Image (cartoon, rainbow over all chains, first blue to last red):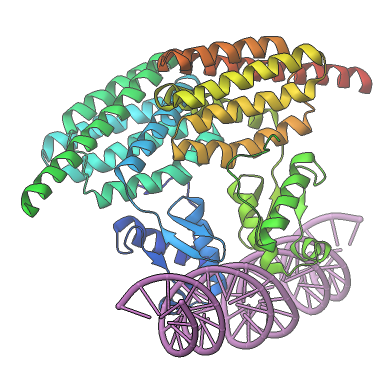
Length: 234
Length: 234
DNA sequence: TTAAGTATTATTGTCGACAATATTTGTTCT
DNA sequence: AGAACAAATATTGTCGACAATAATACTTAA
């Protein structure tokens, strides 16, 4: 089975479980982006006390899914185009470096495993051409493997523990399903090659271009959406 | 007056104040790195309830100064050489990108202000040659200005709100006072020039080299310390 | 004496109530 | 009628107590 987030550990406390539920609700848009959060109401809905709810809210704040102001309260972050661009620029920096480190630090076994994963995705792609889900999951898996391969706990925490929740939120809310299957596959392949060659500089460059391409793809889709919306409301 | 952290806002709630005190205590080493945190004891010492202490602990965890395990408790992060290297590699990625964005997004007024600041530091340097404090503060100010100049809230939050607390902690605990005054000054000068020329690519490259140089400087110092320690214990 | 198991203690997680602050509603004056 | 001020309401911040889990100390058996 493919993990949603390779860095997360089992939710043992009730605050953990509520945190995960709220996380899903925010990412999927069940809790509207930008909406205010009422502690008494949420606590009642999840049948927990405000203390443990606040504990859960603190974790949501840690991965930048909500924002708190003293004596005022919490709001779900809102998804803006500016925010999306900022997020992808940050990803470019962090994942680019992670990829460079992966080229330096990954074990041969890890590299072989990633190559096998890519081959498997290639088969699935050939089989279920057009079905975006596996490709989507494949993309996420690929990026996680590279990040973990950096063997840099700081980078791993920042990207997997914080940024990726926001990335998933934007993907859900803007309805992105990474439809650049064949091109992304080729890019992944080239990146793995660079890592396998232990060419950190090239690996970083390729990863940055890969993410930049993804960003531009999303930008185009948003521009397109805005265009059709304008036509509808006209 | 020079701000310690340009992104922080006034501490209004008592949890905020305790958070700041604990932050100082951890950064300066008054709370030993790696030591366990007893909630009842700390709450008693600061004369607050456990609830507000836990609120403060949550913020400390947000900037990676403590680590929590469910049903076990919190520990102050420990300063290892590996952690230091990971931190600087992450800085290289994030501040490099911030510098590139600053070259694209800073206003002319901001650039002029930064040039003026550099000139002032030059005077101070000439006047108080050898006094490292102002140079240290100058370095911090310079980096903050560049980061804020990126106009990228994501980068600003990550670097100023999270990484820099750890950076200060390492600087304090390892007794670093950035003694590469003249060289750092020249590097700052070149970076500002690149920003002023709106050359994002060069700006990023120079910033990355600047941070890498700082990292190597610290590495050398640590190696030197270890050497003398070995001699002492021999 | 050591090891394992059990009982005890201490620490963390969760709860409901109160205090302090912000927001809303209602009133009064211009 | 609109704006400014005041009262009432609701929300967040803080507190102390209880429940659940982990760490410790003790007892017992091999």
